[in-house]
Each structure stands twice: as C-alpha cells, then as structure tokens.
Image (cartoon, rainbow, N blue to C red; front, top):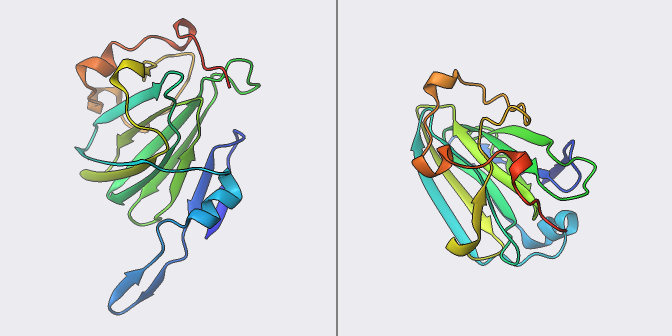
Length: 183
C-alpha cells in the first residue's frame, strides 16, 4: 500500500495495491499494521456507510471533545470530492483544508484525524461512501462548519446551484464562530 502525505500534517492518503485480471480485481482495503505504521495507534470501533446522488454535500462535520472522531474514508462506488478542514486551535494550518477526489476507480482512502471537520460532495451520478471511525457517534457532541464559508475557500468542483445539503448542514456556523479543538 502506498501512503501519501498531504499539505496538512496528519491527513494522509492511502492507495492500495490492486491485483487485477480477466476475472476482476482484488485488493486489501485495510491493514491495521500498515495504517498504524503511518497514522499511529488507532482502534476503529464503528463502520459507517452512506449512499448519495449527484450534488449531495454532507458536511462539514466533526465531534466535540471528549468524543472526537478520526475517520478513514473511501468510496466503494462512484466519485466524490472529500474535504478535511483543520479546526485545531493553535495549529499553523488552522482554517486550511485538504481536498481529494476519491473514487471506485482510484480506490484511495483518506485519513482525517481528530481536530478536523470533514465533508464530501458527490461528483458522479451516485456514490456509496464508507468510513471507519475511532470513536462512537455521539449526538450530544455533533458539530459542524458551514460548507460554503468564504473564509475556507473550498472549491467543491460543482456549480453552487447543483449542491444540495440537509437542513442541519445549511445552518452550521462559520469557522470564526466555532470554538476550535484543543489537541
């Protein structure tokens, strides 16, 4: 498995080795030893999956302390633009983001550690999105940042009129109005 660092320390991209022939393909989608060799000791406790259609944007979500979540995300079917925003107080990259196209073709996975808000938008007709979490979902600690905060400057790669968000996601605060995460 290849591992790529991103512009923000701690956010990593994993690319598995794919073995293909006339029958199809095979790859290891996760190996604890390889993951921990790059991202550090992590115990995943919950796997999630979502299905969405073109233009659906989910995020930017995070969980407040003490229930922060790290996420290893991948696309099983389709293509998304995946985004991680640094919300760590005092971080030299606070407010900056990393974005990556994840798809069933490139089979890449992105590790979003604690202290980041996460979101994605579906670029294909449909997308099946899967992710491993290192902490359980806690509704009482659920939080977010508005997806179109001008301070973030995220290019979602779609016309704004094509993007659809939930009522909850349309009411998230600006980055400047959140507390930020102590890490």
